[in-house]
Length: 189
Length: 76
Length: 87
Image (cartoon, rainbow over all chains, first blue to last red; front, side, top):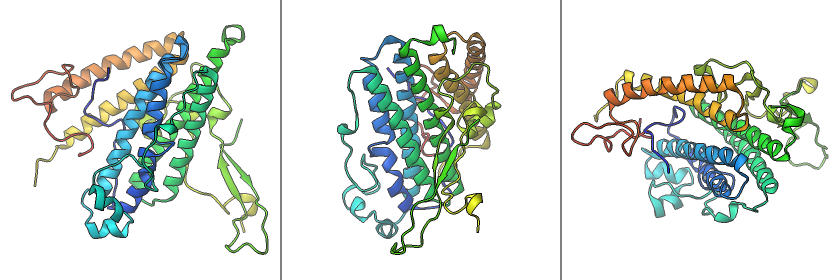
């Protein structure tokens, strides 16, 4: 089970009311390479991978939920006090018509979240390579999001999330090495 | 060692409608090169680690936005 | 104007985030390096530090963790604002 802790993993700040950026950030909320997809992908795969790498999937999957909460916080703050007029100008008129300022699991183009984003082949190597690719894709998405904002506080939170993808990618790469079972002979660990 | 960013020069056609981007780049983060973390790596202090998003400077890969056209070789 | 959190809240929260981040990093590292004794020592050192900070936070700003992992005064404090995304 999980225990909720009343804090974010990283202090999220946004320094200006920018609902258009919220529309783009939602890609990492309900998009194919977003944090929800990542959390569900790893926590689902953990049931069928060899015992040696369950911990990696369990804990990275858990950390992804903390990242999902950070993205949600950014979106929440960016639209919280925006007027319907501002939301319309930001391209969120359609969203407002259906959802007001409620968050929804869809991507930046408004396509609803789909479980088809989540791969689970049951072959540990195939799944771990999928996970490495997922981390690199999420890293790239954070780059494109950083490119689109001039808010230093928002850039700061996004840079933290991007760096976490680099570390997660590393841990999945190490997991592949563990499953190759060459480590005792090569003394690399 | 390695560099965390690579540059390339896309083909430019006289018929391209937008002002051509002469140099493009992509990230090649440290986890591509050091795929298994060696033990006893130097660490950031805890506060800096949180700011950077990692405990280990070796795996810190800052990203400062697009650098198209900013490559030293082609600086006008 | 609704209730504002004092500077001390943000400071303590940041201290917790700092220590917890070291713990996340070491935990992920140790998952793939279970024999690194030095890292395990460092992990346990920060786990201890986390407990101290958590107790300070609980006492000053109400329960940090749900489901009985922090004590509560009356009336039940868990549901009190602010929640993490609000501050």
